[in-house]
Length: 305
Image 1 (tube, helix red, strand yellow):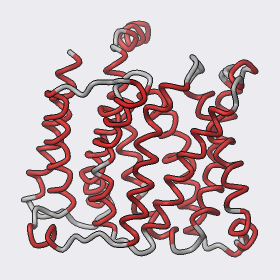
Image 2 (spheres, one colour; image 1 turned 135 degrees about the horizontal axis):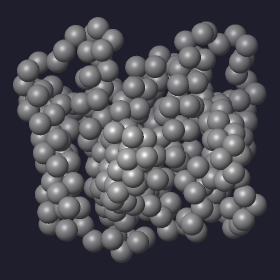
Image 3 (cartoon, one colour; image 1 turned 120 degrees about the vertical axis):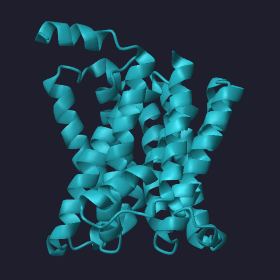
């Protein structure tokens, strides 16, 4: 098949399918950050870490926007939009790392599965997006499958889950994450995803600069171990710059609840990452949960057909 035919085929992808492919990539990249993120979280203050990743991501996205000719002055109209969105997403990351100081990863993952439902509520409130019975059923199946994967299909492990201070802090962060998705669609005025993401990252960095200045100043950046810099650049480039663009791209093509439904895939992607890194496979019973999340996404895709 010729290059022209390939380009023509790509051009025939519906906006909905483009959004789904973007979020499939998004969920895989986010999952890959879990191992590195856990190692980095104990070496640097959450505000300093988030400010650094926003700064690096802004440079990457800004360079991309300039190189593709999308760095236009008109895109900076109403800068308050970027401050609002940047502040919301910065709050999510800071609260996530604050919560993980005391919350067990398995408990935090369970809290995160509430995000699609919260996003659906915000989608109705902000955009009047209606979640159909079919979509609600798909989200419920996906949530059950994600929880099954998180707890390894073990009821005793699920019973051990409890809500502590860390889980409560992270839940507030998840509320911010859920609100961010419909807010992007509400506030975007036709700017390209790359340009809109750049504005949000710069604004978020400025918010963090004010909020976390004491932590940023107190951090001995030159003495940080190599793993911190490795983790920081992965978080900044792959789970900040790239995922922010993918999230903006998908949000403009899919309802908020469908966008956030891809968070249900994160536990399954983490399993694949762990297997790829030689950390072993989970119990076979976990495959039931993975199958449930796959069924949920198929139901959502069929609704677009």
